[in-house]
Length: 135
Image (cartoon, rainbow, N blue to C red; front, side, top):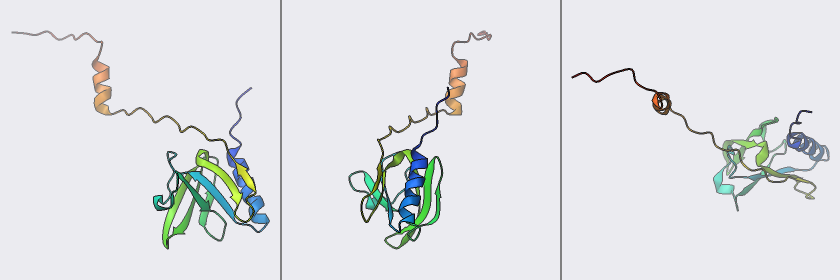
């Protein structure tokens, strides 16, 4: 049996819709230190940021299976926000706190850097040269 995809993005979208349908304000708590998070650092407290994602507060809102992205204003300045799904700590209604918290997810391992120079060095290792020194 194959492994199923994460239910986290589906739950986030469903709870966001549920909160909006009830006329409340959706807030998203985010681990601001998670790789790929793009938020205004001036508003991060204790490594987290709480974002108002109510339709009246954001534009160009997209929540897919990998990330949540939208435009919003912070201190009057427009900014594009990007939040990987696994960086979401909780989604809840501001007015009554109802929503859902999520277990923390370990960030993915960073890819091993490769450069053409390193690849060329690795290609030559372990091979015997066919060249001879001529005097």
